[in-house]
Image 1: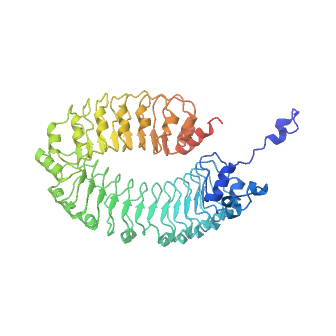
Image 2: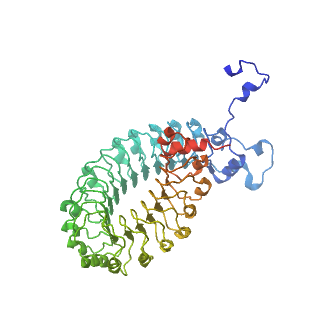
Image 3: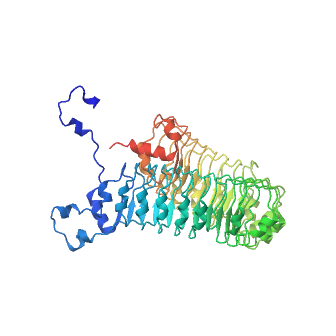
Length: 556
């Protein structure tokens, strides 16, 4: 009350400082009574309005005013609310009144500021999908474990250190995502989740794994070996173990395992015992390890269709590679391969229809040898890597692969312009043009309707390339270490698939608050620019905090 000590002529001033209860347009509530669905995402709500909780209890305004209803509008025939979307708000507390919506089957609260959940959540016995990612949850109420109909539970990007011991009661749960938390162990009841098919545990601190799923993601943990229980996962089809501390390929006698991702570990050798277990393997990713030798026993992987050995220490290839009957993608970039004769190279091209075309790094070639293209003639080349050379233009013969080429790497060359010819490669999904001398992109690039990612770091762009605003399929744009001075959020919002935008180390003097409305962004990098706001402390908190700050600065 100290603000009124000096006297105030307005006798109602003390009431005017009260914050009005957040409201929802009545038209939305009326429509929700008919459809059973209410979408309140991205409305800046700090709490859920009471009229939302009481949607199926209170009579609507028309009825209270004795307004007559037509047959389709009779409020007593309204549909119970089954789907409530509250994502991307600023909600800090969920009221116990959530129990007033017992018909909910979907509740979406992701991207808010929740640090706890009410026990009343356990009363939503019809709930099938619960989204709680990107909050600040430290724990979960044990009552949640009584939701017997729950099928999907997403909790990524929280602060969870443990999961309730009663989690195993969720017997119908098929999908669980607890990635990017602080979990060190899993509850002993985890094995009771008999319906579980898809689990994401990456970016935690786990030293043990579950054993009963079809897809298991344990990337970015501290695993040095695989528990014996993993060999009992008879249903496992996909296993992600990237970014751990494995020194050996896991011994996995899982009869259904089709895809194994063990990139970015410390694997030094491939042993016969481990290879022989992979009886159904189709895709094997071993990139970014320390493998020196590909053993002759690689022929044991008779079902293998894709083998990724990128960035290892391999100096030679065994002749037995040619005996793999189903292999059609072989990735070898970043290995110190020596002495591969032209006839062997031609044989590899003839054998593998989607082989990775490569020029060994640091060859410093000013042009690509014609014989390399001749050797690959009439083949369905999917990936081309001509990085770390001295190219000043895009090789025109790339157009020979326009029906099949999906990835191209021209990084670390001397390109001063990007030929429009590259835009005729309509199957492209990934373009890497890092470390060149580019300042613009051809307008024809918007014709690349399958392009998902483009890397342009360390070039000479002074503005955000116009054509990227029109390339609507883009999911990733890496434009760090250039001289970009502005970005247009209104045009950026047209990129409805964009999830990663890196503009670090540019010349941005101003960050428009409307950038916070690009709600598809999950990774936004702005560090190293000369703007004053937002402060570095805000930027350092990560994308979620940055986006929230920007939204709060939008003029109302």
